[in-house]
Image (cartoon, rainbow, N blue to C red; front, top):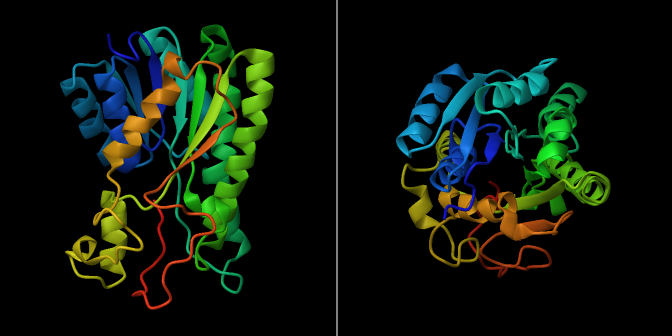
Length: 270
């Protein structure tokens, strides 16, 4: 039996990358999926891909920071499928900046998308999730623990998301029966990550020339490998586990010291 049979899941930022991989995996496990993205051109192909996997799907195009967007996503799920069992807060923006270059506008925008939008969607979805004893899965980043020097606003926003997960994972499960957990991906080879590195001047085949200290397996993590782990937190098999943050990286991230003679490349990020 599929692990998500009869469940309805909203996945934000699911037009591409990790979000799309989670939506597709949820579909193959029996869920109906609400696809969301702020880019209109990404949503119809993602919906079609989920339907091709044999699942029901509906799409919504809107910036999550727009007033009323969380409520509209929840209502779309209920109107389309009659219920809501889980939300995956995956949508995020990666903002470059360090202590000298980060300005208030960029910082506010990063927090609005990466931290406040997940909170607002949880608030909007809570009545439905309470009724189904559902779950929330937040997609964070290993950068939450410290982060790259030039990703200061992004790292702060993901650190705040991690605190949100632990706080609500206790309160909402204790009071509402709703699980809240988080995955912190390490360096994942998404379409956007490949494009960013090419924009930084790396060769088209840069993933084939990464030092083993950053990818001991000889390759980066695939979005589908994050999606496989995500299903556990959306399925009933995760039982009473709540308020947990799990790092998904291919080496011990915290306290790890790569060899000093290693070739320098940007540290891992999703």
